[in-house]
Length: 563
Image 1 (cartoon, rainbow, N blue to C red):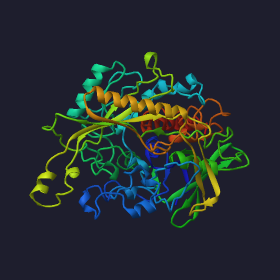
Image 2 (image 1 turned 90 degrees about the vertical axis):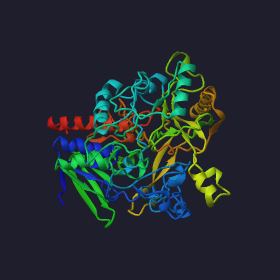
Image 3 (image 1 turned 135 degrees about the horizontal axis):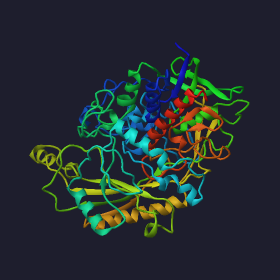
Image 4 (image 1 turned 90 degrees about the horizontal axis):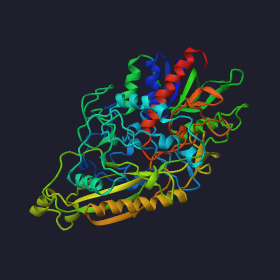
């Protein structure tokens, strides 16, 4: 196998797929490494057409799964019978917790781009300037103007449905036609518009094709099956498998190598550049070395940071690019599991068609100036939620057979609606991951230990998240409004980020404004580890935009012979 390339990309998830596409399209012979097995679009989606009755116990989390995937099952939905194959075995891939940390992982080609929630939102200058304004952590080295064209670029390619609403804290984008609200969601939308001047209800902005086609492998319109986490045979939602990787492969410049764990980035002290990546074959445990002019680390936050921490040399005794000591620190996520639900009366003659893979969204309305500012917490939150009509299952405990049962299963239940908060976690230096060299994995690499918790700012925010959700549902005239603040630990939002942050100063950050390691400019990091603050929206679109922007910069720097 060839060992010399123009570029190496580590990881095939959302950011890795984008790096592969951009670098290959720009003419670079690119090696793409994935630690897990191959997953080919459509043919390797084993449960994509299954129904609950195709499983002996229904589509639930089984006792066996709770043993083998105990941590992966904490979400209560990722390891159902239809989804579990895309999430790792916790016994084979252990990690350690000083404080509970819910690390949800998928080790296969495509990574979590196959299982993501597909909500696609832009950060804004409320986010990019927040740290500087609040005196928290370090300032972002970029602003919205640096990202705007790249947000537009990736939205155009992946396909994002949604509506433009003209809010400065919720930047508009390049959208396909929005999905429709149902009847009870419309009631809430009208009530919020009449009651509040500082907030709105809109449909979620989600990476689903709702009109036309998009580049990739046979990508067509969403069929409203809502089986997205299993892989979509229509390519209707964006994934690396259906979109960026096929596009990269079509150039003839991509070499994809699955079952390849990147253990470290190799460094040459004389040139002050990385020379390549050392790899462990997961099946043979053979150690291989691949060389390249430029390296993109896109393995997702924790693996990328682990690779850098493992990349030790005389120049970098504490890990490559870690002169600041910030590598592994400032872990963030989005906190959730708080909000309210209610029952809705008066729509018993109404129903909906299909299973819309999307919900409603309430954009941030806290701490954006004037009367919106809170004295109890900084930063903000939004809500994701929706309304629906329950099924027959609650009413058939005594009707397991017969005519009554047949009638019950064809009769929809009552309408309900809910709002779930989605809030920002601040970048606390003490929230960190470290490597444990006394506990090695099956390939002789150190395991990860997490020590991260939410703090007073998030706890105060959660009180407001619950109160405002209860109030909005009550004002809409809904019945039996019930607030909740459930079981949350960092990681449960599946948006871990921040462990190799961007910044202006090498003394306080790991990456510069172009996503390069400050002191190793031919190494780029564009996954969630690069985030300087979290914002309060789903971050994947930002990872894509950062990756496309960084790849463009890398190619320009190669042309100038700066790398």
